Image (cartoon, rainbow, N blue to C red; front, side, top):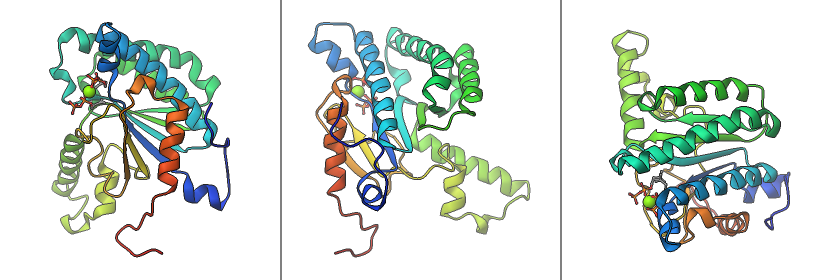
Length: 248
Ligand code: IPE
Ligand code: IPE
Ligand code: MG
């Protein structure tokens, strides 16, 4: 496993460890292609890397892990690839129904879930109920998520409340707006990691990452082991987060 000590607590740990890590899990397809395998095999390998990552983050005492699993733009992919990803999601959710309580993770799904197949939506609902009794790391899985859609949906929701007389336009501030997003109530990510050698956000957490530290790595997601996370955490520990102010 990694180099960071398990569940460090105290002031030093708080200063160097992110409370909330977000990961753009990219590079599954290239991982498979390098091995002459179908892209679906890369997605399965990515799902395994994700499980390992959740357990490792939990062991470190990270409070929240948010991962980008499927974007609003990923529907453009060939139908068999979309089907492979949905099948993996099904399998993951079924396994979680039995594993979750044992592992104590709180699993949440963020995004426009209405477009997902009905059986997947039911599995998500079952997992939500099981997760309610868990107390460990909060894992937010973004599925059919787009940062722009998140902002648009929040605007629609708030406009509806204004039209219904429940809210005045002047009451909409950054805090109210944040709470109307799918991530409402979560702290903003301290660290956003993108694997797979691209330096872009690809429509992930646009509002929420305003002051996140952005870490881009060439490692393809299936190869993103706890040791690779340690490297990202060491890099994060060396940042000087000023939030627009001045710090020594
Ligand atoms: C990320 O890996 C997973 C999803 C976007 C669903 P990719 O499938 O994008 O892998 P590459 O970028 O083609 O290697
Ligand atoms: C971002 O990866 C989305 C996910 C990891 C789910 P993409 O592979 O879809 O991003 P682009 O197309 O390279 O920007
Ligand atoms: Mg990609």
